Length: 391
Image 1 (cartoon, helix red, strand yellow):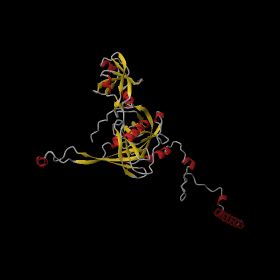
Image 2 (image 1 turned 120 degrees about the vertical axis):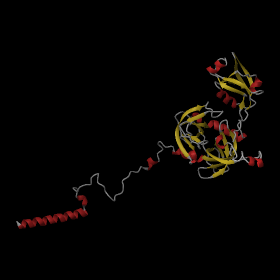
Image 3 (image 1 turned 90 degrees about the vertical axis):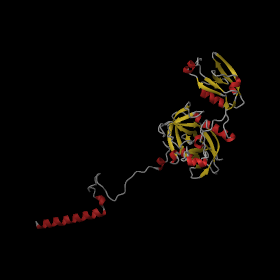
Image 4 (image 1 turned 180 degrees about the vertical axis):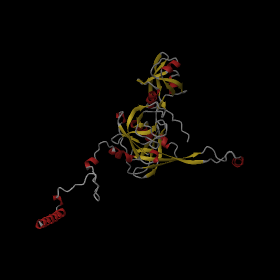
């Protein structure tokens, strides 16, 4: 019995020694070894993360990076300042002060600053922006996306479309590529690029919400593209581009009760902006045709109030003495139906069409006076400039 126990002990010792050797040099042989559970925490091991392949990282699916990269260099930040007079001098009512200065009281002034955006349209340094961005500015400074700055001068401005052209003197300027706003449709994706609230160049995305917006009372000549791409103070004059990075409109105004973006922004389409820009560059102003009448739209209420037939057209409510319409015999109470054979159903359409005619051109105006319809020849005159805004 003692010999059997000794043999068992020797065999056990040999097996334990063999197991120790195998566990050190060939641990994979021990397939029966307990594996760590999923809940076990393994220390001193690198984190296992997933990395997307290069093909996925550069895929253009649902990204507008190419459009932004193309358009952003041509969009600039515009900083303006002007000197304005304070309302009253603090010593203006002091009798002792007035005794020495009388009515020649020194004016108290302060310099105020504002900001906006613009789009470089040519390598000659022309920049398209809004009239209200640079109106009455004493100093204008332009900041490019590459960090360069330059002073700018106003080439010309058109308050009736809220467009202006300024110019800087720098070389190697990036320029925007014009798209075709006439082919834009509701639902198209657009990007708005500008400098909102002065935080720096920013890109926002939305869609075209409506086309041909007018009768908003923002400008004299309106043909806005409406978008829900966020447009905030400082974005004015910036670019509204399509998914290819081409300019289709110039951001101009927002509808807001709070002062910030509420999803209703308005931009001036590129075809209108181009016409205004070219005239400003060539003539320093925009030359438009003019009839010399004040008008209002015809509707059932207007027809009933003036005892007139309810026909599509524009009611003449005033005629400038010795103006084009006056010389042609047009009178208050006449209804203007169209010009040169083109039916113009409202005052906005009539105003826009006449503005496109060259001063000195002959136009045939269809008129209805009470129940009689006839045509008169009018010599179009040059539209006088809009009254200047007080600084």
